[in-house]
Structures are given as C-alpha cells and as structure tokens.
Length: 413
Ligand code: SF4
Image 1 (spheres, rainbow, N blue to C red):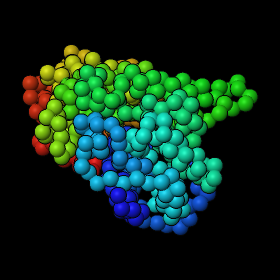
Image 2: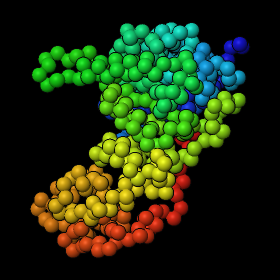
Image 3: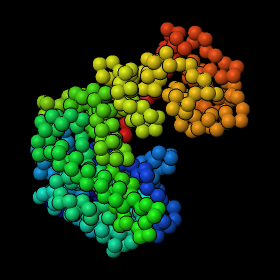
Image 4: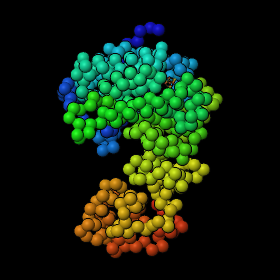
C-alpha cells in the first residue's frame, strides 16, 4: 500500500471512528492545560463535540489508530472482508497530531480506538503506548478515552487505566446470540470479564477519606459502552434491560445507543434499512430516567407496545399516561420520588419545589415559574389553587400533549 500522507490518513481514520458513539467525557474533572494557548478554530477532521451531563461541551480528536482489522464483524464497515480504503497511523503520528491540535486549542482531548491488528495484545499495547507517551514524555494533561481490546492481557488493561481518563469496551449487540452470529470472533464472556476488571480497578482507585496515601489513579471517568440499535431485532425493552444490567453489574458511567446504519456489501443477516433516529433518542431519554429519575427498565417498558417505546411522546409522559391512577400528585406534599415522575418536572425543578415548599405553600403560578412549561405539568399535579379535575383522565390527553410534529433529530454523522 502506498504511503498515505498524514492528512489523508486523518481523513480515513477519523471517518472510520465516527461509527463509535461511546465517547463523551462526562465525569472527569477539567485538567489544567499546560500547552494550550491562543484561540483556535474548533472545526476540523476528526474533531467531535461531546456534551457532558452538566452541559459542558468538550472537543475530542476522535480517530482510529487503524481501520485494518483481522476480525469480520458483519455490522462493521472496517471488517476484514470490507473493501473500504484502509490506513494506519504510527504511535508517533497520533501523539504528534494530538499535541498539535491540543496546543492550538482545537481539542481538549483524544478518543482513540482501533481495528484489531495482529492480535488483541499487540493492538492494546499500541493504544497504551500512545497514552503513555502523551502522559510521560509530553506531560499531556488533556482528556484521554481509550478503547479496550477485551481479549488483551489484563496487565495491558491495567496499564491503560493508569493513563486514560475513560475506558470503553463495546458490547455492541443487545442479544448475546446475535453477537455470536454476527461477530463470531468476539466473545461476550471475555468482554464482560474485561469490564469486570475495570470496575474493580476503578473502585479500588477511589480514595476513601480515611486513606492517607492516595491509591494509584485508574480511569477516573470510569467506563462506558455502546449498543447498536436495530441490527439484531432486540426490542427497546430488551435493550433497556440490558443497559440496566450493565449499569448494575459493571458500574458503567454511560451506555451509548447508536442506530444501526446499513453498510455497503453487508451480510444478508442484517436489516436493509436503519431504524428511525427518534428510536435512538427515546432510548437515551429512557436511559436518563433509569439513571436520574428512579425508574426501572420494566417500569418504562409498561408503556411500550410490543416492546417498543412510543416514538410520539417521551417515555416519562408515556409512563404517566399509562399510570393515570397515580396522578394527580400534590406538589406541596408528595415525596420527591413521586414528583420526579411528573411529566415536565426535571430533577432541578423538583429539588427547587422541595426546597421552596418548606416555607410556603405552592400555587400553580409558583410551579410555572420553576419549570419550563406548565402546560405539560398541569394535568398531573395539584397545588394550593389548582386541581386538574377530569383533565388527568381525559381521553384526548395524549393527543393534547403529543407534539403535532415530532421534533427533527439531527444525525450524529
Ligand atoms: S473488531 Fe471492531 S473494528 Fe474489527 S470488525 Fe469487529 S467491530 Fe469492526
């Protein structure tokens, strides 16, 4: 293969990385920038913008070390049998690119993944070398997210955690049987074992107050994974159940959902079309309900039809419409957990309601001041001067609250 120049490699390997949704740098503290000076453009090949839960936008150089791969996962554009253009960075090239982009303020960190070259150990070793060189030879203080190669020696995984802020191993398909069928060289047991190792290490590195000496640093922003939606026939309820068990079993910070996108010359075992992007969006909303609103996966599934979430209304509203006997709730007396289930009330609003009601009894106009739109809330609450009467049970309530036209969701790519 002719030697490609760096720019051409960047174009190929940034494009190849865009299919991995598992990067956002939530959960890390901002590092000091030792090298970033001046104002730089934030647009460019391979730069992705990720939003943290607190709304902070961070820019990462998101690339693959190489899109050559000895595996042949049917759903992947980089699989061995694909005839996509290939390229490979050297370790030094990735280090140089990262430092140059960082110094120019284009990025705050690096997301680095790779196809499998030679073996899991060799590939992981290359990824670790990039992170180690950045940290030790160049005192790089930016964010680093490294992809884990689950088959790699646990010692390499351990080393990766010393240099990376976040690690991720992708489960990819919600059904184990589908992973076996579509990615026969992968082993879900091995992926879970690697995740389990990361969990134990992350927990061991969390300093206790009584500890005098800090334990060695290990992936302080934890681990994440990605599930592809719509490739294996798993309905939303099964996907959410899978996420719940990943959060519980491996202490993941995030599960990312990526709507399957058909690839050229794909296997006949794969669907021909992609699922609606709104499906991915509803799964993110449901995931949010599990992490911050106290919902369980089966509860969210109560309002699903044939296992699929309602695309017309958000999952919290769908649940409330399905459980109208629990409403209206009194904003002046209901426990926080129940207020969190009121459509239109977010965590911050609920906390402000709980705080304000300690010294005054809330009227509807008080709630209106605290939340974004009281129209959605009104049928589900009572306040000092408000009771919804028959509105809570109105047969046309869903139609009244469903947006006339579903909001347009932009593709990640
Ligand atoms: S191992 Fe990763 S890069 Fe290689 S074919 Fe499978 S999903 Fe694609």
